[in-house]
Image (cartoon, rainbow, N blue to C red):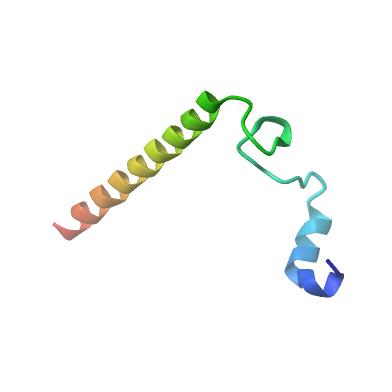
Length: 66
């Protein structure tokens, strides 16, 4: 990817962030989970966090409405 493709903002952020590294849900940047249980637990945890966030947003919306 050339400098023109990245854009000015991406170049600026890359220069200022000396610790930049890709972030992923697996250990040590693996492409797949070592076990099926680990993959399932990650999906379940993500869904639980998503549901908790949705409930909190709904509670705020109901509180402000009524």
